[in-house]
Length: 461
Image 1 (cartoon, rainbow, N blue to C red):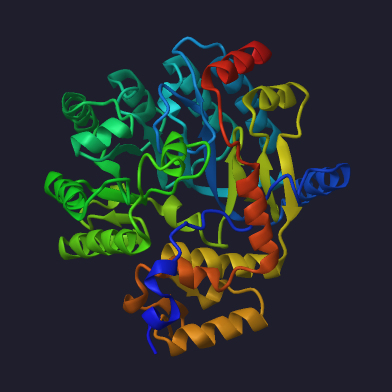
Image 2: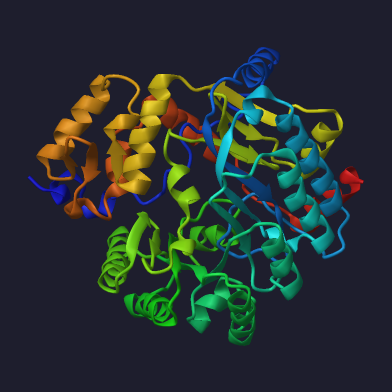
């Protein structure tokens, strides 16, 4: 029996598990009772110094990349909604900073994502970064990352980030193949790339970028160009992202209408393994399923990227649409920017949905995210005896050579590399599968960017 016997290649799962448990407005709409209970637990958790990561969502972009399905708004440089957003975000920081739970947190890793955080004007970006320092104890922070876009990266915002403690800057290059860059709506040129790299080097930032595979019309040769260029350029941390097209990504509609064709499941798996082997042969080491690091540049490692998927750390998530786990509550903030701003003015709550996370669900989370993202589950994290589902899944996976058990952990085997999300799905319960479907269904099927922007700006003012 082999892994291929267990998962025929045409049915291999590729959609990543990013959240577990997922929350959505179908099943977890915030009620008066759940709000009271969540607030009570935030007030009662002062005794335990719980480790945590902190995520902050900035939902603004200069343009809409055709593959992007995240919660973003395209805004002009002087749009007043960005100041209104910063005001609201500072109020959310203050809300948590007043809680016994947050005062007891040991925040170790920070990630500011989006969107494009550096779409914010420097004055607003400074307010946000300074607000984190004012409201939370950051003395234990090890890695502090901000995502940038080459078009909005500048000497001034790089220096600002450097001044206020950001020690990792990542950006999406995605591909060097001209025809792929064109239909991905990627604006930055090679000249822009060279200029920005000089500024990063001047400030001592390691080179960290994303590249994408399984793109429509992308060949194995195209992908080889991007992987080899990343290695030859000495990128210290390479994030390889599979193209998963769901609404409201513009490419989703082109593929659905038959105007573009995605690679087959077999081709996508082959491209992942192609990159995995090339990076491994070049001396890169595994951090998460999509993140590979040069071992000689430890400052480029995202520990946030690992602890995001471990029950050893809570995740305090701030900003519109941000999803986190705090005080044993999984929650999602209000997604709409104008509504998020209005909630802030009313003193909260910022959450649109939430549900309590039991020890059983924490353990499911370790198996689903651990196997899918990190390829291991330390036994020291497990809070309960194995459930019947977990026991049966492990028995089957070990028999097929997909998982290896040691005294310390359950670990994905080398034969199962590329099949990791299929392995992870064995541990997802029907209840959480339903929540995940509800979350995807809640995502907007289309966004009219101009009208959305005008409506948001008007309401935020």
